[in-house]
Image 1 (cartoon, rainbow, N blue to C red):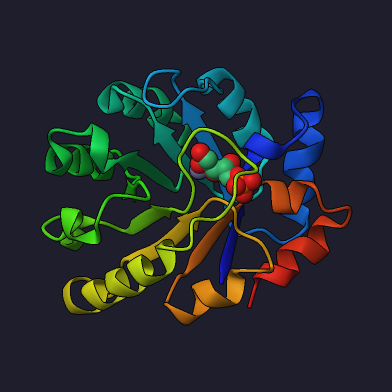
Image 2 (cartoon, rainbow, N blue to C red):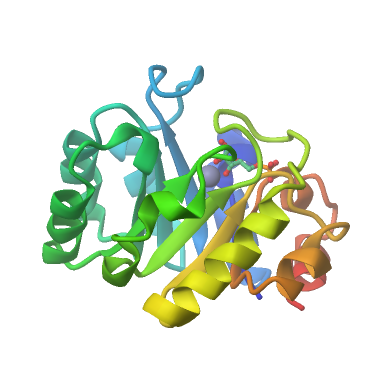
Length: 213
Ligand code: DX5
Ligand code: ZN
């Protein structure tokens, strides 16, 4: 299992310290939650702060867009060269076009599904993706409880990707901890995002290691 701590739960007064801490504690990606106050009822960080994160991170960035105008935000964050940019399928009229755009910028494209969105929504997009991110909470905030229906959904998506695109990774985001990590592993999940679980832990190395099963 790969682990992507979400900096949403970091101490923003000590952002450099916290980003360096998760990177040296063995994380695989640094998950960055971009919220615009429209698609979700919360507002987070823009390219100025994310470039400061990029400057001190020794692991690649995983940018999760929770915004209304995806194309505008892709243009804003692409110069920071994240490993992945993921956008919500619920908010995109022309996903094929956006996938092509992200790839043409040298970034791996990923699509996010809200808890209620069925995996079939991306059946005809899966071939073109490097990753699918399944939300296990309603997007907008850290520290919410894990929605269990993501488990059968991830299982279904795992079957679909084996058939259509075995190289496409499955990531799960929201309420992940040592309590549900085994369930996620059993249904084929490759990457977990963990915000409060990692940052509320005194020993971040121990927290990350407990998810790397
Ligand atoms: C929620 C964000 C998550 C969040 C996860 O909208 O996408 O990445 O920070 O935080 P936890 O792990 O605390 O649920
Ligand atoms: Zn996220």
